[in-house]
Amino acid sequence: MRVYLDSCSFNRPFDDQGQLRIRLESEAKLEVQERIRSGRVELIWSYMIDFENSENPFEERRTRIADWRKLATAIVDSDPLIVTRAAEIQSNGLKPKDSLHLACAEKAACDRFITTDDRMLKRRLLLLPMEIISPIDFVIESP
Image 1 (cartoon, helix red, strand yellow):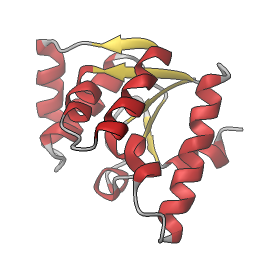
Image 2 (cartoon, one colour):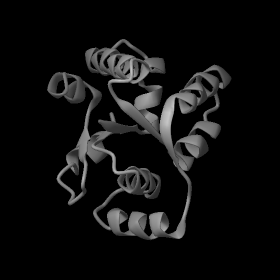
Image 3 (tube, one colour):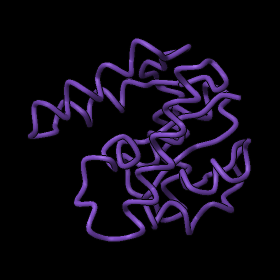
Image 4 (spheres, one colour):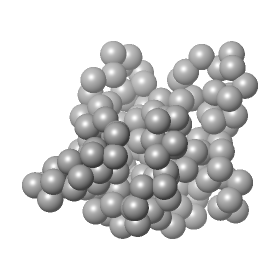
């Protein structure tokens, strides 16, 4: 199974763990990481993850997230088709960066797009070849 984790997912374990939802999403994301490390799940990386991670103001977070690139089985680079597809996806009410992440995941033929972003999760019924899913739902549905 090929998965794409967006920047929200990668950053979730660094968020304030005072809210139950954030703690649960963090634990689920850590389980996804374990599945990637063990080879049960393939991680797909993209230039958009690199770009957003480079904007992270916290050096430790940037470094720890960037380390995941080494475990990716594929890295999606920018190309005009991704930009065009992202514009189509954006017309469904998503932000430009989110649309670019989805277009990258689609190009890499991902099975699941994992996010903690409520806006993206509410639009999970977009006509995409992959499922947009929270880390919690992914862990529950994908043993």
